[in-house]
Image (cartoon, rainbow, N blue to C red; front, side):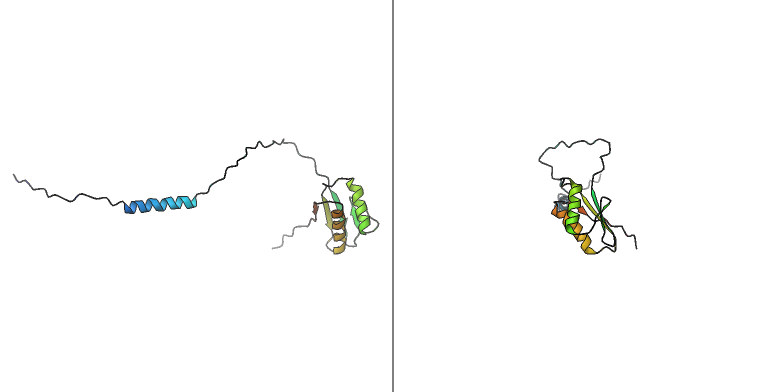
Length: 139
């Protein structure tokens, strides 16, 4: 019988350095790409709304044409002076201050007429003044 003599081999070593590098890189990747959400400290119970439609908000409309003629809620004013506009707005407001003022002016309206309407509204304490425009869909 031929017995081979087994040679003693060096013990096998497993090098963990590349494995640790890969795990470390994955850890850095997940730390950088994770977003954290800050939880609120106060618990709130929000009110519920019914499906019914809310009433339309009342507003004051001032219409100004190209000749600087002013109309407050459909009533034509005798002139476009600041005192006239302010007294007409005050009559329509009836002591309320939370009503929005919508100023609709023609494209050719002089700038002063619009400023007069805005000035009258701000003197009466109106904070919600808007100037609606048409959207132009030109390319």
